[in-house]
Length: 239
Image (cartoon, helix red, strand yellow):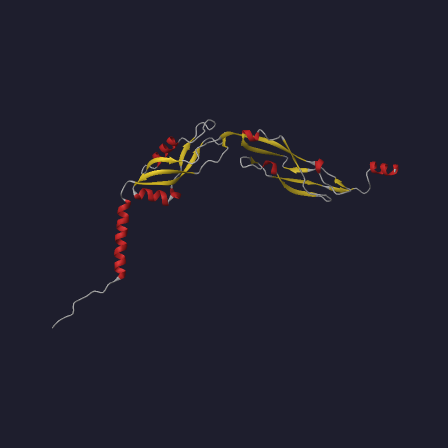
């Protein structure tokens, strides 16, 4: 008796699994091979005495580094940058440091990431600018000469200000140029009732300056004159 041949039907699921397993094996084998190069963003931390010195231009948070390694090493540093500790770049004399020394940075980086070979630093901005970090106390006084009072109204109390002085920290060239006293102008027009507001200190707004306060509270009482001042009466009588 003749029997029909046992023909197995094509199974696409198993074929895809085989192709996927082969691709995974090839990918894993490729990652084990050395000689790959890649430019990666590597975090950098500048180490200096920030109580004495302050940068006057922004310091980069990352540097582009061209490295060589096997596939696994490059995969870890390119896909998982948040797990990488920043490399420390020591600035011994900030006032004399004018540029990042790429040789020193590459050596520090090579010491930290020993599984990678550092080829070179791709630095777009190498310039460093520092100044001495100093502080200054500035008095705050009300600009009473430019108060805009409504007719027949006048300030009837002391003009209170809180704080009366502020401390300003920043680069020496900027801080030394600040005045010893800042006159705070009251912006309201035709004041006719008691005044109590917080005013911004816009004169001191600068990205490199840090102030102990950025607003000042100003308050004073206002009274209404029930009769014209004596000088006005005298002028009217002459008329």
